[in-house]
Image (cartoon, rainbow, N blue to C red; front, side, top):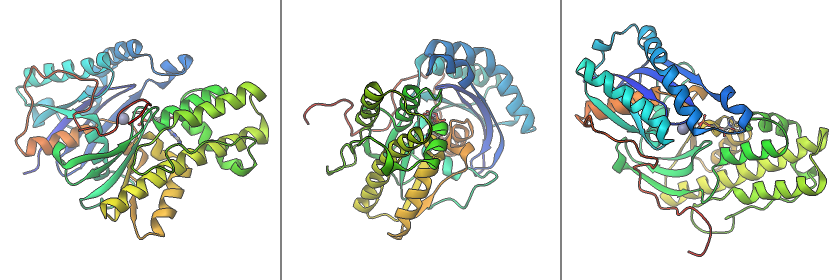
Length: 353
Ligand code: KG4
Ligand code: ZN
């Protein structure tokens, strides 16, 4: 049976609401980014994010229902991201969803944001290509998360972390390097643009390839960022060609780590499909290198349209709709958590292991 769900997403700096069916049809998808609000601080300020969600969310929900041509009474349930994310930001979405569910007498479905990202490839929207069959390996790369998963199905228990970053997320590294180079926030898109014009081998700095020689699928990005920081401390911020070359070298190094670890995990699992997700999946270097490297090994790569990669509520509504179709709902005393419900195998931080 097909169900239709209203989804809410406020885990970080996007206020979003969407109406999606359990078949993946996106009836509406409204996203309001807070990027301009956080840009002066060079990163997301949690308290500011929560307050802005509280101001913006009612209007975003109203718009999502209106553009789906639905009333609240027409949907079968209310899905909401309840983990992981910023505690205050999550609370705004969660309490709003509880109010809507209670008021309309609809079931509430708590969704793990990371599961939403991993299933976003199934959303049927403009630009979407036919989705993969299970099982597949997924590389989730955003400003907050960088991890590789084996995905056998859409339930929590079907998803297994194979490796993750031990320190910074890949997007975080792009943002920090952009800040060091005076390129503003968020850093990914501008570094991507400059890198396309630069030549990595011409950059006057050698960047480390952390975890490259190690078995396993853990990653690390803070050392790459620190090497750029040391170079800038000693030589100042480069300009012109030198800036483009430095961006190219940084991006190439990050991409190489992501591609080699993802391919390694895919081989180890004996699978033939890779799915990309998260905002960094917009990176042209990553898309190109992953597609080329996978093709030579006979592995298929699935890259969802950008609107499905960056934070959105459609992936939350869809994940919630699948749960609801299975009869799984959440109690009205559902709590938020800053941590994912997925089992983690990677320990954050350095040190011996
Ligand atoms: O998934 P997302 O929209 O939000 C979360 O972090 O959850 O991802 C945003 C991140 C930022 O760190 C941003 O710099 C990065 O994705 N990003 C990129 C590109 N576009 C966005 N990184 C590299 N290249 C890009 N073209
Ligand atoms: Zn996200």
